[in-house]
Length: 208
Image (cartoon, rainbow, N blue to C red):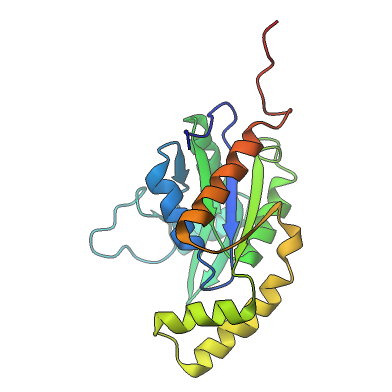
């Protein structure tokens, strides 16, 4: 498939239950399409060996992070193991001004927050596309998680319980992809992007 057009850079959110395949799909999109990029996430945790500020993360002090929350600068943020993580609106807009589509790989709760935030932000509300990726059933998801071989029985059950709750939110997304193979998931995602870029409100007017 050809490169998706750059006429209107999009903010693309892909969500899935744990084990649903969203990280693999995002990695495939980024590897194949140079005009799709990730937004660099902010975090309050300390840099690990080899990590570069502004490349791997924007490393912020807790005070700076809290100030940015208070002033409404984040599209989405969360507390994970005593450290904060978040995506700045300014980071997404900056990437878009380079002509690239911006990809966010986030959970269902994070997607709901982004959806709410972009609705009131003029630079993003008409460029937002959300996709929910999931295996066809809980049984199929359980088989994927078991194949990993890294889940204890208690952890597996917790993930499945969380997945049942997340699956109830599928209709809040613009698109649903029932995951089959890596190649087919990628093909379907590319079709979605092509369709979104041909929407009347995003298309360039034909010449007469």
